[in-house]
Amino acid sequence: MNNAEIADLLHEFADLMDLKGDIFKRNAYRRAAQNVQELDGDVLSYYREGRLESIPGVGVSIAQKIAEIIRTGSSAELEGLRAQYPPGLVELTQVPDLGPKKALRLYRELGIKDLAGLKKAALDHRIRRLEGFGRRSEEKILRGIEMVERNSGRMLLGDALPIGLAVESYLRQNGIEHVSVAGSLRRRKETIGDIDIVVGSDLPLEATRLFVSYPRRETVILQGPTRSSIRLEDGTQVDLRVVPVSDYGATLLYFTGSKEHTVELRRMAIQMGYKLNEYGLFRKDDNSLVAREEERDIYRALGLDLIPPEMREMRGEIEAASGGRLPDLLRSEDIRGDLHVHTVMSDGHATMRELAREAKRLGYEYIGLTDHSPSLRIAHGLTAEDLLDSVEEARQVSEEEGIAVLRGSEVDILDDGSLDYPREVLSRLDFVIASVHSRFQMPEEEMTERVLRAMSDPEVNVLGHPTGRLLGRREAYRIDLERVMEHASRQGVALELNGYPYRLDLNDLNCRRAKERGVKLSIGTDAHALEDLSFMSLAVGTARRGWLEKDDVINTLSLDQIKRFFERTSG
DNA sequence: GCCGTTTTCGGCCCGACTGTTTTCAGTCG
Image (cartoon, rainbow, N blue to C red; front, side, top):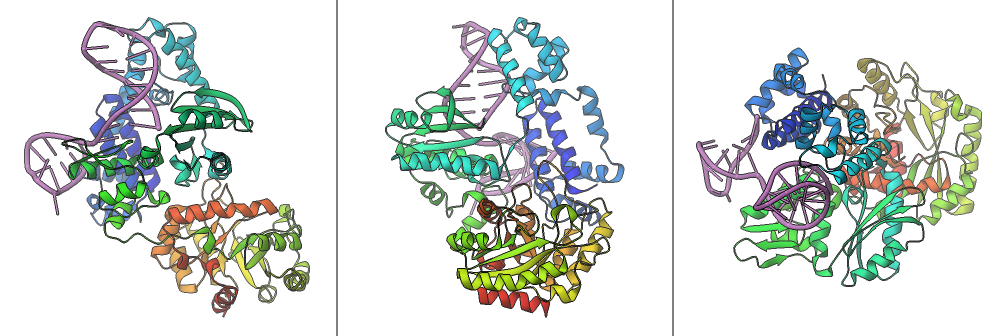
């Protein structure tokens, strides 16, 4: 039973409390679930040491339930609650405009207990006969079901970010000064629900007209004075909100979230005798304005430094901002080179020279080329001979193109933790990433030993995509990251933050754990084509969500410094 | 169920919108 599994059960408690109609208990369970999920360390050890109640949001009652879950795998009270409602009821609340109250009535009065039943009842016009429902709600439910079925997954950050930023820059280039993506996209979460754009303009009709005439727009879904939605050629929906310039900061703050973060800001506002909403910060007694034009003004009035959007997740950022202890987060400009790139020699699409030129154009000082090793047949891993021949080619290209081309390798970690090239081959390279690409199902202990052994090899500089997860496709493999981080810090091996859209591995929370343990991160895009080098922005966003600063990341070092880093770890 | 710069009891974020109502509950972000 790990943290995520326990958190899932607490979330289920929350869902069931919602059906019971107790929103305060629901909130309490949600908060506990989130804190368990993001807990730094294993819940089991909190349990063994009798300090479950030191987890925020966990009191006597929830601590007992967690203990019971750890001992027995479940909770008697949870079983009892489950027995009261059919399991499909929570799924009904995924349909827009159906919350717990309506879902429960549909169940009690029409016996509807899942999406299929709901669809049938709507088609049979049985729903409109219920008091409080009507023809329009029935139609809305049908549209909602369709949407849930079609669009249940979230978008990858890597898909949403270019789209959102393109719309943003289109509006800016056409004279809109106050414009930004908002929501989870602005916070650079690894997956995104909706693409939201906030505009501050005193000519709202013009801004709206501009938005709905976006060149890549296919249809206008909704066009109003403050809200509009369009669908793009690729099917993506983009929502726009227009507010007066004077309200821009307050509105952007509100629509950026996270919800938990803004709720906390409102609580603080109340304690200070204020009221915070999407129009601004006001005095409670006479409704007079305190701040609203810029996000910074509102934070300042609440006694806080401006919190970067990527940190607004209720993970300690409020305390840091009130104590003047916010980290100085990594910036894109700090990155001096990409350290994980594939060429045509293995499974990439661009040549060494093309990549060198593109890296130079991006302003990099160096680029690290890391083709696969032979055991990864599917990716045409290089023979030792071809790899060594390319070392000389890299030197030549470096000189001719005026940018340092570092010849590295992404060498496979074999089943027993040995590496896929002999040491004398690896020692001829500028640096080495070691990665797991096989036998993902190993038991945790075996996988951990395998990886630790690979990291102990003096030629290894970076552990590639340390958990192997693929967003929406594959779970992380089982590995004891605590031991991996300890080992990394002792051995002077960096852990990778891989920027490939499906990976983003390490993720935000693990980046932060690594930083707290003094482990350095190496950022690479895992590019297989020239345009993939742009994945760097996804990695930087994730790094910022993990509170990383410039000094935590090795590829902010100059060429000389990073060579020393690679030397030191291989010496 | 949790928690305390106002509290060990009594709060727990705020406003808009929608569809159904005739004064509002439920849902959403």
